[in-house]
Image 1 (tube, rainbow, N blue to C red):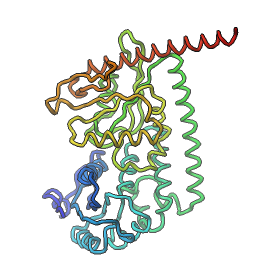
Image 2: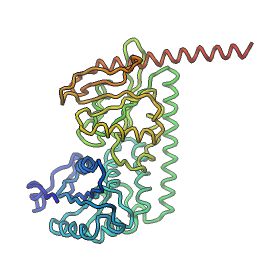
Image 3: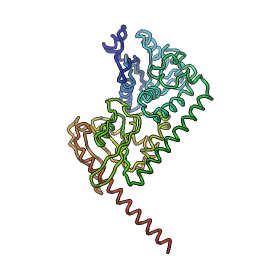
Length: 401
């Protein structure tokens, strides 16, 4: 078990907690992670630390254990839970965050045994999304995901959650608002889905307008914190929020850019993906991610400096397949080469098509290669459109003879 740092002890002894990245006082917590033998366990735990930090949580201690399988009642087993309970009492920890999805029964049992608030990885991610959502559509999508998740966890989650609406894991609908009334919950979800349909229709109109003007639609996708928004800003000269945090970007942002001599390109910056991304979030954000599904090209941004970037590529492709975007042409953009000795450049396949670009969105190194790749993609789309148009004309002429 890893104990807290000196700074954390100052907080425990009565000092006021430091400010979180959002500007509000941070909340203290103990992190709990169980190793079931998964190959990505270390990376998953490192991400939990980052998720907690992004949510404004100060980690006081990390409790780890190894098990073959989860305990049905307490997930971590009675002995380990007793150890956590003693730690929580000794350090007066107000929150325990589990690096796993907990069943409603497990969450109720753990809350009773630990005598503190308990949230799981999904609740933590939902809380971050609730903080990050800026657009009306983003907020609606987050609330739908929260409502669906809380529907099975209302009873016994925390009797005082209504009084802690600003606490991590308690942001959003909350028990007071839901009043434990499933009919009201279902009605609220139905209303929110209707709003999403209207917003979806507005986006479809915009997308059809782009299609009529022969605009290349490019979506920037990738693992969270890979540098997508920095790259987006560099290409479009926009000012999308950028931070060295997980899920710094939540709402999809689209901007036009012009490639010299090749016409117009629309770039869309999308939410980043992560291991074990809750299915409820993928489902809720499906309408936003349709910008990705309808794209002509995906710029798959990869943190070239991350030792696990191959696993991250696989995780992103898994989500892309789930939303129906697996067959859209991809171009890998290996970002952050300024942190290592990799020179800028492009990779081409046996047909001469650019399939990979090495860049630093921060310094601008390699951006000329990425611009070239986009221009070639635009030219290829225009050529394909001409061929398709000629084929359609020939078919029409043949049909009238």
